Image (cartoon, rainbow, N blue to C red; front, side):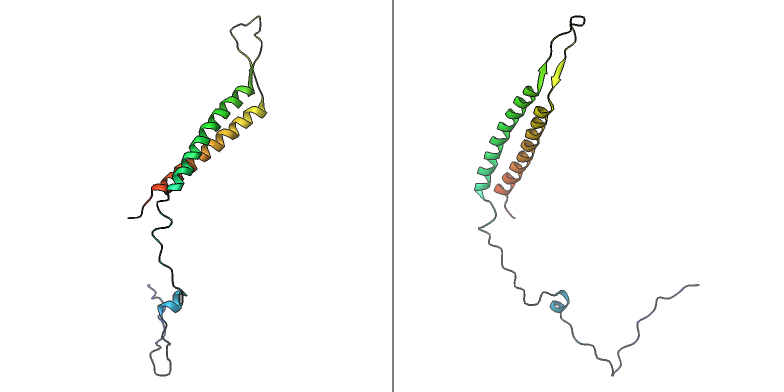
Length: 125
């Protein structure tokens, strides 16, 4: 037993009139005039390359700071007389946390430098 989908009623009679609807009324874009993009502004901005260069320099400084903070956070302890082959270190969490934070900021700045560089040289075909 197959069922047929319900059919729409026949509304083509003289007593029913259907108003004409334009596409702009359906989409709601009536009266909107979109400006043409200005090709001279927005693309190929060389100042973004300067920003990317400054960010790369800042990344290098932050990597240096990261290593300094890590060295500050690890202090070697005295050797044990019974086991001279073992090395013990004290880890200071505040310095190591600061090192991780500096490395994270350096990574984010490196990603942003890549984005800025891509926006500096990007042209639209």
